[in-house]
Length: 78
Image 1 (cartoon, rainbow, N blue to C red):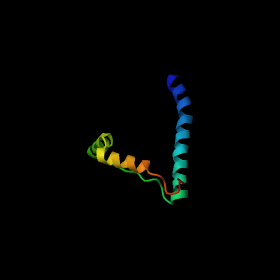
Image 2: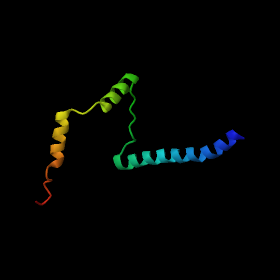
Image 3: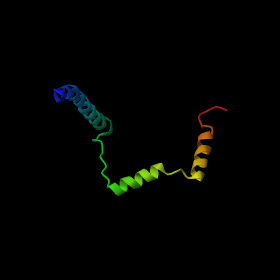
Image 4: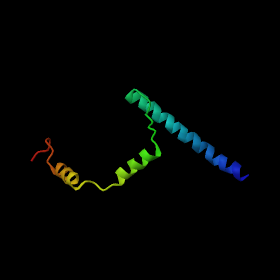
């Protein structure tokens, strides 16, 4: 009975998420002209990516980024 109740709740949810995946694919085909791309990486490549994401930013690059953001936009009036 417990398994039946779980499937009773889980089945519509699974249908909904499959529908959302299908809709996402259809939107990509319509707007981009192609299916969404999948990327497969090895465990070592994944670990290197996560390490790069979690690494603290370079102080010089961060300083330059803040300078760029603090500039006045060309279309803004003084």
